[in-house]
Amino acid sequence: MIPSPLLVVIAVFAYMTLFYLVAQVKGDYSVVDIAWGFGFVLVGVLSLVLSPQLTFRGIFAVFLVALWGLRLGIHITRRNWGRPEDFRYTEMRENWGGNAALISYLRVFLLQGVLMLSIAYPLIMINFLPEPRLTIIDLVGGIVFLIGFEFEAIGDYQLAQFIKNRKSEENRIMKDGLWKYTRHPNYFGEALLWWGIFLFALPVRFGWLAVFSPMIIDFLLLKVSGVPLLEERYKDVKEFQEYASRTNKFFPWFPKQK
Image (cartoon, rainbow, N blue to C red; front, side, top):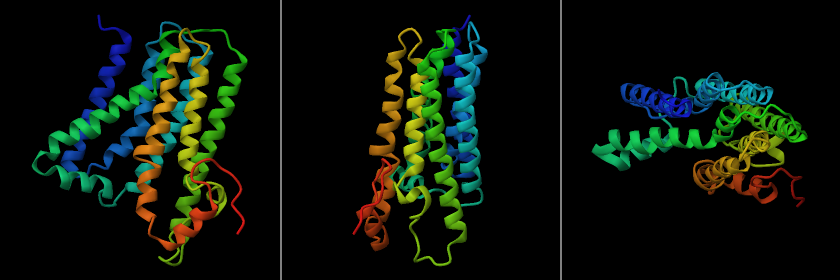
């Protein structure tokens, strides 16, 4: 009989392979971005169903992550629908040449599956090492998660409305709403909400080991695929330079006065 945690790993492997096949048919690796949010829903629900004991902590934590994953997946699907492949993946395809099909499977789709399992590790611990007793830490975790979720959801909505309603291509930088206080409110929110999920795992046996989950997402957003790519893309735009001179890069704070 296959151990339950291994079933979750196999399911994620199959899930990312399916999206890889879709990407090959479409000739568009951007579909992997759609897989990201929905994949966490898969991990959460499957680990909950396979859990040896259902607990309120497990149900609530999975509910929160499912809420986040569904919103993010739907948001990215709407954003990408009918659009050409994201410039990041086009560059990868060009750089990898004739080996793009194999390399993309390993370095884009399977790698994201591994990262997904690593970041979702607190959920897996919560459900496979169930601890029924609730603590004040769970309440704090829920509050932290919801603050992060609001930052990400509101930030995404404000940016989408700005892009939809802007009247000039010269006005390229969103500077109002949450974007007045941080240049990346959606990324800050995503980082924060995973610290909230980590707090849910703390009361579980060996729960502190799950700290690498929010640390991974922080590293990815701050050093790899989130903030650096966007900052690099707009670094030579004068409007962005002025905006960056007075607005915090990541942590929200009041704008600097000139």
